[in-house]
Length: 173
Image 1 (cartoon, helix red, strand yellow):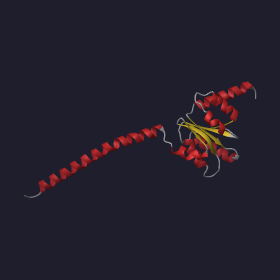
Image 2 (cartoon, one colour):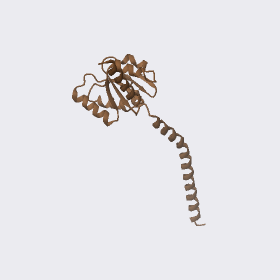
Image 3 (tube, one colour):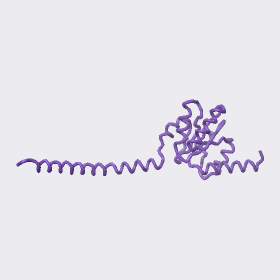
Image 4 (cartoon, helix red, strand yellow):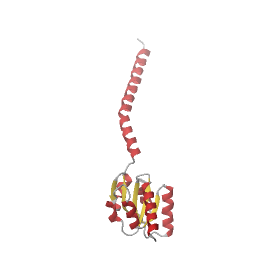
């Protein structure tokens, strides 16, 4: 491959990475063609983009990015594939579900919510990460809960009071 072609490829990889906020670096080496096709189909269905790239080209593309990914570079040994997503935990859930039938893909590292996760042991914590919208919904429901309780108590008290008054008015004197 000529130097010009490499430069274009590095730029293309960099552009793809820049379009997605969440990056997962996985090892899919050893999957047969059928399993690889299943993984690609599952990725497509879950809106996760799967790229197989050379480590040297990947490192050069990441070095040109605005984010300092250097903490992840030591994990780029052997075969590395990149899972790109707009949902923070979608690739982690996809990896976990795919591994019910296979021992791969293995998580090498990830960049999620401006944090670095290294090693396959981080998979469970990546699955548990909530998105920004989920956190906002949790906060809103937590703020609404006390107000709903007060309104409910006031309404039930009013119903009780009206029931007592109705019973007293119906009682013969």
